[in-house]
Length: 331
Image (cartoon, one colour):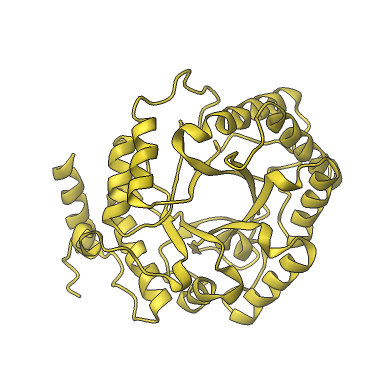
């Protein structure tokens, strides 16, 4: 494939990326261009699932009213058969720490996301497990579950109610959820509070690597999934953030890169996409520079990995120039 192809042509004119067993996958796309354009872009690059922020991810303040195009966005995703939609909670949310003001703000933001999720058609509200900020792992887990309890208390339960999906951590800064055992402690504590039916989990591959899991080896992936199944149950694994990484194994750092270009590598990514125990899991890409056309490159690569094909060429300077030109022209 010539390296001068633009992202739109890499996306193969909207042909859906095929995954084994009808599995679902899609990118995290920025909503700056508008929700309807985001839905259309997801379809153009072959996505069957989608993740977004519903509001500014770096601010506490939430908009008082929904975006005016939210109802049409929900209908458009249904027409395009793009689901499940995941909303990633704001980065500022930390339910696990001892600071009362930060805890209260975090509960309020998560509650806001849960209440408004149905208007977007979102099935999942993805939230980081958080940091205990020196208070200790046990206190952090208890605090996290108390925050989840408070946020969910004002959100009606039911078949269409969104699930809170707690994500593992790479391990920096007093994080919790760094190991499968720590995620199991969250689940056990939440189950004791009656939240087990409203809670699911997300495994981020870059975070697993940063935490020290050698998932570049397919046998290690199987061990991680076996542990998860034994301690929590794979039926409660709802999402996988499929991200390669440039960080050292066990560095406790988190730096994403394009599929197949990092230290985890293509064999591991392909193994996850085809794993017989993960047919129910939705895969989401959080790879860099989605807004500059790398969404199409990485979705094409995801299809390559699932099908056992050589990877679509990665973005070099020429592709980057073409992509940026295409985006600017389309604006």
